[in-house]
Image 1: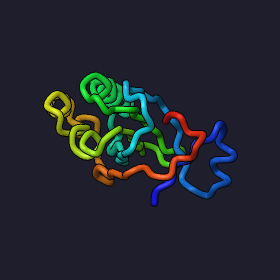
Image 2: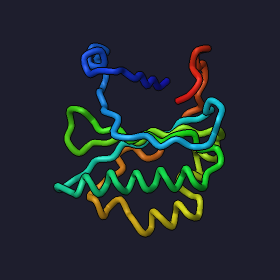
Image 3: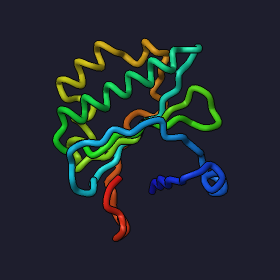
Image 4: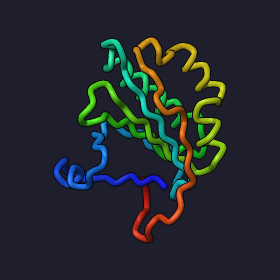
Length: 144
């Protein structure tokens, strides 16, 4: 089971005892229903790599996903609050294919990844793509 909570300030987030990440930005898609799938990957910028360039590359990638993936709901880029150079990408999709395959293998996304390899920023994928089916969203949830 995975759990992702959002808070308006750092204090309540720290009180949970879990890892604390700061939302740097979010890109929303055209999917107008609650997403059925989520993806996650953790990244680390090593050897003093250009973190700002990595962040901008994720913004461009998320915008591309927004443009080409019909079941794309949102991508978030989070920065670890206590570990410099650690980031987490969290994405939400309407279908399993978008989440498990197309988010990385769509031809335009593959082309972007080839032109902007994460290694250019000293970024190492720590976890690989993790994909989950979202179940049990509360009755008051209307969007991500």
